[in-house]
Image 1: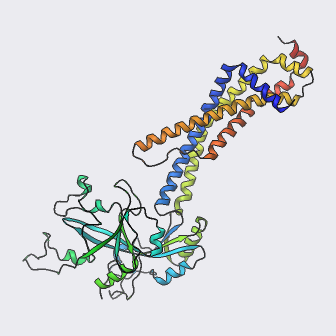
Image 2: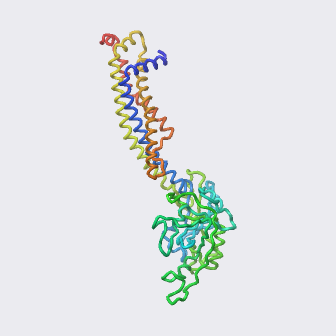
Image 3: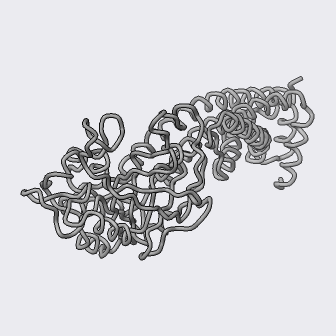
Length: 458
């Protein structure tokens, strides 16, 4: 019997029993949609997590710091640390690694920023080289990257305005929800680099005189900050760069050397006698690896040299395993529905055999091949799986769309349910295979029927 004839007969048989076919297909629809939606939730969580990681440092970047820097952070200003410092020689060494595409020194300093009556008493300025600033791929709301190596200009994070407050009243974004009336690009923002001198020059009341009205210390000089640009994002955008100010490291180094001439620059280590080193050391080194596959190798290489490293890949693998378990559990829950649908297909096919016993007997008597009889019933079961799988996929796409709209309506910028093309195609193939497996036993039963007994059957 030709394949086309088998298709026509199987389709005609299903069409004759519309109600039963529709109910059986409905079971497959529910089962397929359950599996796809459940798995899509796991995939959506994993995808959103990976996107967040990519936006907050990426999967191929490494931060290099001095060993035990976290534990010794409080003493870096006044005492020499045990261990190696981060210098230009180390940057060059790392840059020469075959799998390192970029190595940039990072110089951090905390300053006081003033604008009108407002003040940011703990603004972090991060100096990086030109290549690193370009590699960070900041989304700019206005202005440009501070790429000039001659003039010091600041690129402000999108959350910087929220850190300004009125020091006299304490009013600010985090107290009353109102952003200060500051235009970082147009208003004059003054920077105080010597924070110790600034606070030493103030008395308990906030003035510049001592208890008897005599100045206890000369207030440090304020420097006008040039604005290069502002990073895009609102107060509800939280990224790794949101609370920092970025600039080119060359003019920042020059500025600090002019201000702290023959004095220790805040954040810099000192010798055992308390004197500053002649050269500047970096707070960290930003390293970009050419492929995620080599991040672990590069990390180990740097760690073996005696430095501390951190990268998002440290916990990406464990995160993937956790989401893999979640997907398996959710998929298993959905598979129960499809198992019930498979039982329904088996029941439908068995009923079909009982109703068509005489037809099967006639087919055998006229010489129909046993494999054709088996193929006929397998095709019918496969048709049920195909129709149910296709409709189930369309239904799951609708459910996924509704879920994501609800999540976004709640203010969460994430794709909770994600259905990639491979999941959609796999769901249809899986539904067809389940249908054919469910129809295998009825098909074998039809093959074993005695032709004479089948013909006599009423």
